[in-house]
Image 1: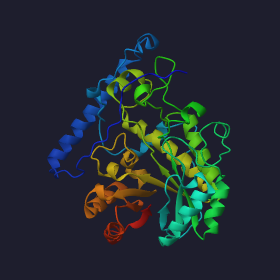
Image 2: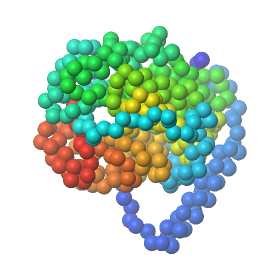
Image 3: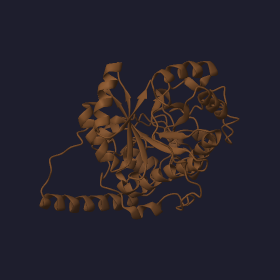
Image 4: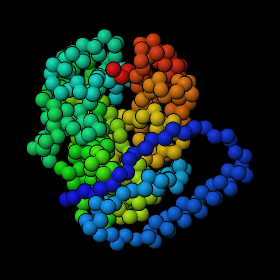
Length: 392
């Protein structure tokens, strides 16, 4: 299938998480106005219908208007009742098996390409042992969708996305032989390689083809869509394969939507409920639930990794912190928030994590320019009650 050209670029913006506290009357009025606005947007979105566009005749002339970036309708909490609006193929029942209880780990994140070969893995493990951590996390699926291990998943094992030389079990055995506990990290929905292999990308509403986040000439790429049952199953298959191989912790990163534009919302992807916060949330949590089931199937613990930039953003939509808007769900998860010196004051950042976590088991992975900077950040976060992990 052919892909639509667009010059859309993902843009990240930082905002101040804290606003001045409003009095009770203003809060009530704000809530009423917000509800009316959301309802109005829903009626407008569904009333537009599918656009009549001859994509293939005009695709060379198509360009997206950068000024038309979509603005989310609300950052209000998602109702617990919205859980039933997700993928019907995902069971709402709890998995039969439960993860093995274990003491809190001290995780050391290896360099992203550490698992490419046994030589690079052994070199990275030597550095990890000196860190004082007892668990090492190795990236096994990156943001491009490349597999850094030999997978047996249908569509992947015979594809061209594998860049690792070892199996997941061999990687586990090498980590265990070094006296450390194996953990795996995977990118879930930010994946430009797998959509074409498992039919999990965003399909155009009115034409044959897949949505890209920019024009192909400008590096436009596909993403995995959480609305697709193929995607939901795929993520569960990965975590199941890794937990079966022996990984005790599996860290799921990049569980998010792309930054869409109004032209995407109203025309090219008008078949999807992208303005409906409840349905967006349900789709993301379908992916999380599938990942967790794959972990718990073989006794592994799942973590959700969220970037510091997203935690600090006032608007969470189209970031990996969008899932934290479901306060009733996030409180039961384990999350890891990435922190660098550029993330701002550590004490203020700790408050932002607490607000987003809403009682969830939270840890901070620290990556700083020097060991002294890491030590200073560690003290702040540990005093705030967080476990502190280290990123190499």
